[in-house]
Amino acid sequence: MSKLIWLHEDCLRATHQLFTHAQDPAHDKAANAVYIWDDAYMTKMHFGLKRRVFIYESLCELAVDIYAGDTIETLKDMQHRLGVDEIITGKTPNPALKSMMHGLRETVKVSAIADAPFVQMDSPPELRRFFKYWNKAKKNAFLYDGRP
Amino acid sequence: MEKQPTQFPDRAALVAHVKTLSPLRADDGVSETRGGRAAAEALLAAIDPAAYGHSRNYLDGAVTRLSPYIRHGIVSLNEVRNQALEMGDGKAIEKFIQELGWRDFWQRIYAQNPDWLWHDIEDYKTGFAADDYADTLPQDIAAGETDSAAMNYFISVLKTSGYLHNHARMYLAAYIVHWRRVKWQAGAVFFLAHLLDGDPASNNLSFQWVASTFANKPYFFNLENLQKFAGMEAPCDYHTNKFFGGSYDDLALKLFPDMEAL
Image 1 (cartoon, each protein chain N blue to C red):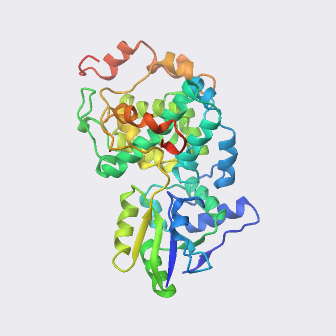
Image 2 (cartoon, rainbow over the protein chains, first blue to last red):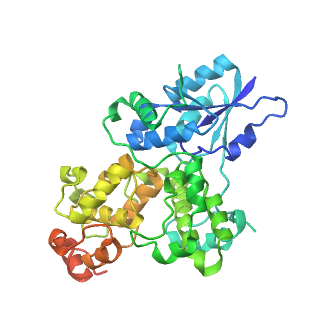
Image 3 (cartoon, helix red, strand yellow):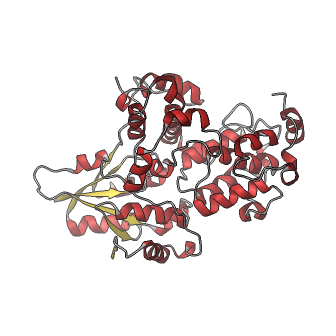
């Protein structure tokens, strides 16, 4: 059994913490990383050609295999063919991607790993107006890694 | 299920391949801005947070152009902030870090209230109801053929480069929503289709801020402001932008005749 890294458009960076999470000391070989080029999803998200070229160029600099197709169908197919027991991906607020993760969890463990936070706070900020958030965030926002 | 190529003889070949994968978008243009970490690192090394602090509102100000890379996680906000800290501290970099905070703010809202992204968070404070605004973007705006030379310039830059300076986004968004009385959602879709950094949270919630459905008052501007901050790049003469002329009070009466006093 093995892990599979699923990159989506919010986490196109080799130093994202999801890669650290995907390291398996029991295996010498790093987990495969894939990006699913899902035309229907991109259309739903209003991605024009400019954006698509930008994403494709970014992928070409990463150690990632690109497959074209429906995201859930393609990942489920890979899961069965490759014996994947965990899909590791980047945490996202995007409900469409979260829905895909939810669909995948019917058959496989999915771990969504958060990126390094901009600022760490003791309690959730008030999000109704920016300066309510900022008055709380600025305490650590000017510190390295956003924390004391 | 076929693995796609990741090596191409040149950029034109890559673009041609992406077009085969995007049949409905094959006729669109392509930006000169390159994707990838190498391009992002070059921009990151060139940031000037102090200059950004005093020039960011001008179209030729020291902005970073990092937004498409931040949007796609190619660089993190944390990395950008840490780089800024290496280059200065205190008041000099305050505005730069605060602008990173806006991105964090929008993303936190997105995670907590995804339903806010496409729906009015609050009522318009313009004196108009949501039904008073058109559902679709007028064709002359989509084509960049409006009666304003400045707005046509911004639309052209947006469509060819996939980037607009933040102040230009605010001008164009305000023009769409307040001068043309079009629902902010129609403008948001237009921006998302062209911006390399198009992010549902940053884009849509900024549109709602301009529209006043996520702010206490509508954002609008006058010709004097447009000339001051955009005149070095965009055609901002009175004769091709005359409906922006006048004081803020005069424009408020014209644009929002039923609005309660600001």
